[in-house]
Amino acid sequence: MKKYIVLIISLTIISCNEESVEELNSTLDVGLEFSIVNSNGEDILNPSHPDCIKESNIKLYYLIDGIKKEVYNPNYDFPRNFRIYEHQNEFRIGIFQNHSENEDKPLTYIQWNESETDTIEAAYYRSSNAIIQKKIWLNGDLIWESINGTNPYFILTK
Image 1: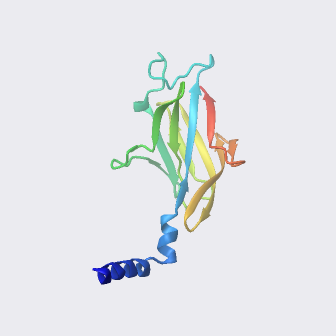
Image 2: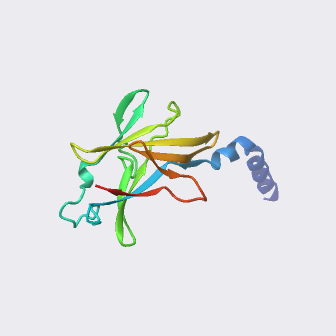
Image 3: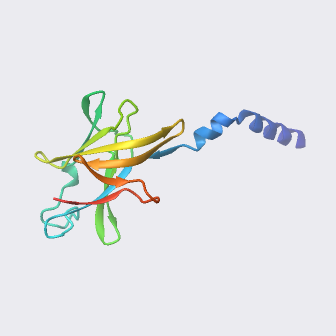
């Protein structure tokens, strides 16, 4: 029995190499959170607000190789790469941004409804096992920069 245990441990150690350990330690940091308020400061992501932004109307698009593609992955927990959730006393939308390696600053379009779209642009640090946000722009304005480990969060007024 001891021979089998030693054999299993030996095979396990031999099968692990530096490359497989590195793959296990991957980082994908492409998330962004918004609170959205109207001009009166009211939370319009709150589904009980009479003028709320309806989740069913929101669509994300990624610009990939010059083509604007709607995001939809039916096997994902969040097939459209966003989610609306309650955070403490407000609602937020979490967005998983475009991180295409083919683009210097990948673009994500957030279509709120048929007539309103915002553009998110991000710069990333990339390595063999990590994609980490450095800067984020909303409609051309810098809204977040990776300083002191702060999470990308922004209050958007609509």
